[in-house]
Every structure is written in structure tokens, then in C-alpha cells.
Length: 120
Image (cartoon, rainbow, N blue to C red):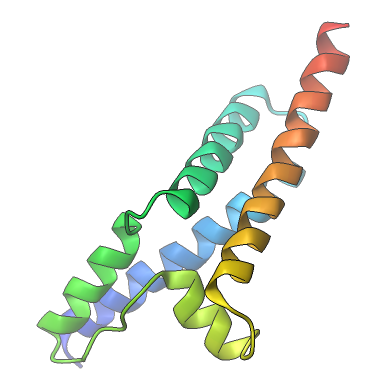
């Protein structure tokens, strides 16, 4: 097996873990102040990278490794490529991005609410 293919698969796994962290990290960080701030920063980054027209660095790395492995890399954002193709085959890119931002926004809301309760 081509080592670049293996590295691309590792980056894909890290990318999936990152998305799971952004969505469900609030469960892990509930009573852990350091993790709570890391998750909060992750949410801010998640919203930012969805709003701005910049590609995610993990997507760029995965595409680069796939091209070195001789595989034609996919075009467009990670979420659109994988989720649209597997989970949401008939949804637009704008709807998926809106959903991602809504999930991050809900997580941010829970963090802010918890912070307000803690300081009150």
C-alpha cells in the first residue's frame, strides 16, 4: 500500500475526529475547565472556517496526500464531499453549511449559558 494513501487515511480519521469533537465536545468538557475553553475555541474556529471562503487545512493536507498517492483528490469542502455523498445526497451546500453553523452556535450557546451560571 502506498504510504501517502495511508497518511491520507490518517488525516481523514483526524478530520472525522475533529468534527465529532466540535459537535459532541461539550459532553466531555462539562466539568473540565481547560477542555471547555479548548472546545469553545474549536467551535469559534468551526464557525469561522464554514463562513469564510478558505478551505480547511486538514482538507488541503488530505487532498495533497491523495494526489501524491496517485488518487484524484475531491474538490470542495470536506463536509460537502463526505456528508453530502453519504448522509445527505439531495441537500445543497448552503444548507449543509448552515446546519454546521447552527450546531456550532448551539454548542456556543450552551458554553455561554454555563459560564453565566458559573459567574452568577
